[in-house]
Length: 138
Length: 393
Image (cartoon, rainbow over all chains, first blue to last red; front, top):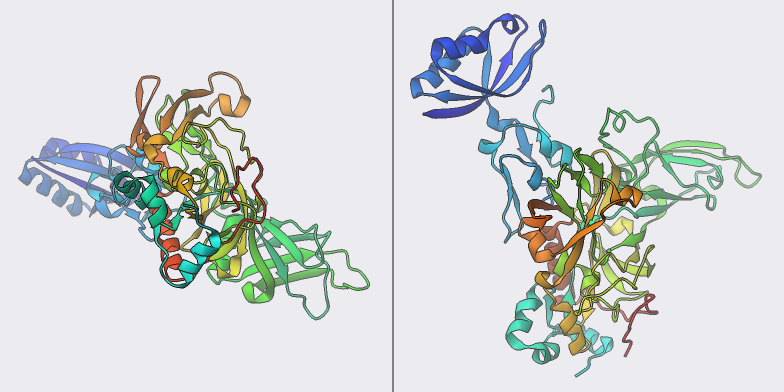
């Protein structure tokens, strides 16, 4: 079983396609939508977790690229600006997946993008603006 | 064996002073005992870095050729209103001041509060210029009625931080018992005890290391956001009468100090503007206070560790705002708070802090280095804080 988080960028014309249906029905990919902003006639974005056998999760994104959906890794969406972070830890209890964590010896706050589901809780609670979203359209 | 401040300063000048942070001293006392430590150690440094709302700066702005009386008129810096009810060229900018109708602050609820007085102060400290707009009534001696100009530190005779209340000696742990999230000065509190926010450096916090203000008083020199500042007065809301534990530390918020220091010498490493979603803007400041080890009693105070310091868990959805309902739910130690979770009403509640322990450590370590190098001498307090049991030997 392979699992990966991706950002799907839809252009206006692909927004009309039942893309997620095809991913599931034709490629057998398990799709978990983490966050989405899709509107008819507009560019859209969807943050998803794809799971399945190796071949399924690699063929799925190939299909997406073929029909014009840009696929990017999700990890780079949220950034932890370590020069702004003071290690105060106020974000830590707000992170639902422990992507933000603190070493209780050094009191350094760390961010693990692999665990991040882009819920944006940290952006709301960080008083130093040390957590940022690369593209704030979602 | 008692030591005077003068004796300690002589050792600092000759590079022989033994200085430890309030964190380092804990194990030393456990190992060597109080008596030996009192003989060996001269100074213990404390530190804190945290949002402290009662902060702001005085500016005296250089006059243009044709002079202007801003006093009694109005002044803004980057659109943020400053208090102009002083002499011709003096203004005071509070850290929490907000610009009127600013889209950076009014983009829906909860507001983001992206820019305010603290950000103006941060901009100036970073070397940027800000836009001064001033309107006055014009007099025979000060004919200019309006002024709009980019100004930085070079355009000011004076710029000093004067914070009426900093360094709270202990603080509430905030929780929310309601079924809705709330946005407070203690951060976002999730519904149904979803999180608990605290705000103290605990064992490194300045006033928790001198609980009866025996050495910290009016005139005490402190490390203040990168500059050398002073305790100007007791802070507002200073309450030395708070109930004490056996080790002398208060169970609830107690003493405070008003601090003053040269803003032009401060650095962004030790001073940062902050935005609390749904609440407002304020300033995080770094303060380090040296505690002279004048006798064994001071050793006992500075060696109190997080497991012997307590804070009250207070309800912020109903009790804090209205005074109704359940208030102080329980007390917890700083060791429990720093472990990552506490138990409130039988529920495990994750904790977060606004006071940065990492930065507090840095402040205490930096102050220790300054003292060891002879770059920071201790002062004898000129007058005690109210409620102090001072020792001005």
